[in-house]
Length: 204
Image (cartoon, helix red, strand yellow):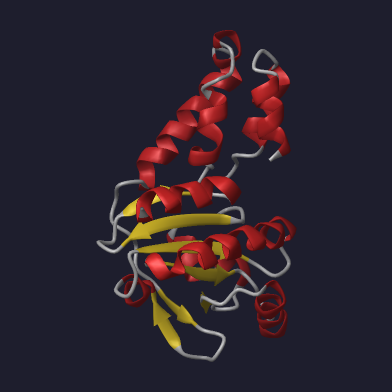
């Protein structure tokens, strides 16, 4: 992402810190993607009040879910059937629980990256369970087809009141949680190449 590249090229700039902070809002702040860049900022920048606050938030979020048992939920598929996260986990080695919506621009831009990872590692036990925060079933299903997302999908069509999203404290999308076959959260908010490299590492 542009803000990560800016931070990498300008480690002494407060602007780098500001960009990183602005792109890690929400309960599941993007630790895996953001912390490596934050850690390379100059000591002076990290020592600012904002730097200390961001560091604390990233570390707290990492510890909040990573390594902990998953939280199960049941929601509705595009075909109208009930599907639980537990059921998906039982059939795969690693499951990415991906929170998104058809109306979410950043989500739609990230979808091709998820498709790439899915196609690369689906034969090695990786899958995706996308949880939509849509309210319109037609738009939800159309987006799935247009973006070519051939994995599990569920939604209660309640928007931000989606029970699964509330269970995981979702306040912004896209957000995701990677869970292994034992039901343990391996990582949160893996995006683009970070997601690819993580799944590659785990499945090799």
